[in-house]
Length: 316
Image (cartoon, rainbow, N blue to C red; front, side):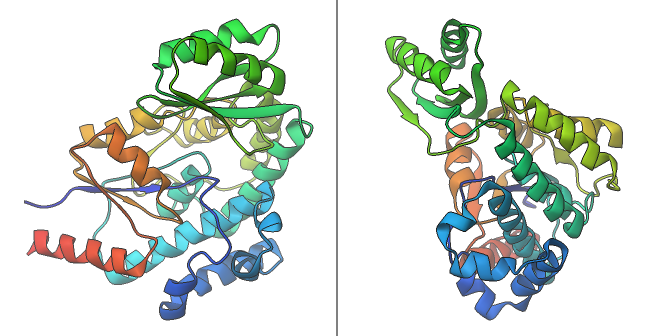
């Protein structure tokens, strides 16, 4: 039986200094992709990724181009090794832009500049210390949303990442997030963890950033994806380029529907999901969303070779 597979691309938080160094030493397409991104950005992105310092790599406006480029580099390596193409692609938050590049909807040069701007706008939208995010473990989605409503008190706090069953991230004004953290514990959450981020992503505090991002997006040619791309705000594909653009703008201040996205992938008949990018965050989430799916990260060359071998065995 032929394997039906999808690719998913990670978001911010998967970066680390030195990522892809081992695979780049053997596969020239990795550094070639980074060179292309560096030319567009006007600085040496590969040097930043390899040498840091971590404080610089972790700045949102530099993190986002780094993760996107790493993801696209691995995708290009896959393409160099096989003609096998995923039936669907999707990405978590920033990863949606990686998915669009790989689906030939956005050129890499435009995408890295766009996500650098996206990161800058997100950072500028909320003053340092005013926003917060927290992960809520072991509580149903409805109870988390209810706690956020009760905690708001004319401030913003809301569920923003539906990452896996029983794992929801909330974001908003720091004081409101702190009130919600107390309430979800009262409602029975097993664990509540503040996240070490300065930007409260995917909540209404990002609306000003989204409006400016829309202006930048309007200046970029966006093509119909050659591979269907499931978007974060709908967990479905866009019918038109205009809708695709609108969904990218809405994504900044709307929840990431990752559980629904992975379920939509499974419902499409996919049996295997490959995480294409640094880290294994999505692989862990995907296993918890649907245990029938085979999931694997392609960050290491050995893993990529194993995935190709498995595909070839199914095709032969």
